[in-house]
Amino acid sequence: MARSQSNISNSAIRIFLQEVGKFYDKERGFDPFGPKKHQKDELLSFFNFECCFCGVQIDQRTLSQDHLVPMNKARLGLHAWRNVVPCCKDCNNEKKQRPWQEFIQKKAGGLAKERKDRIEKFVSSKNYDPALDLHVYADNLYEDIGSVAMTLINLRLKQAEEGIKKILKK
Ligand SMILES: [Zn+2]
Image 1 (cartoon, protein in one colour):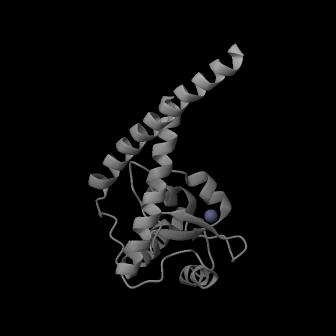
Image 2 (spheres, rainbow, N blue to C red):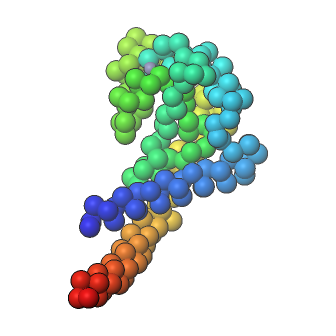
């Protein structure tokens, strides 16, 4: 049961971060990040059609999106302009929740500094603030939604149990 509760809470956090991301984009004057085709193009051309970590060539078809600040309970990265960078599928699978600064060191070798600067330039070009602190809202959401969901599930579970008992008695 505890596992299901955290699954529900984690899903809620992702939805929350997507919605906050849309708002954050609008407030900064952007069309909320989809990504739509022209938005993917913008990402790709900023990074010269290269994976931002390992440098392999990518295009619309092979593009994977990585959230620099991960979209999870601990880090609360937004699905928004400048938190999403273009990378190859291998890097996306490999990076997981690791800090990108550490990951790029491993993938870019001698070009790590250059690629790191490019990402930083990208992030600051549209004032995404990685220090934006949403914990005050998200931590409550995480706790509340889990307990509300479990209350509802347990209520309906009892009713279902009563229904099953009745049928079995017939
Ligand atoms: Zn890559």
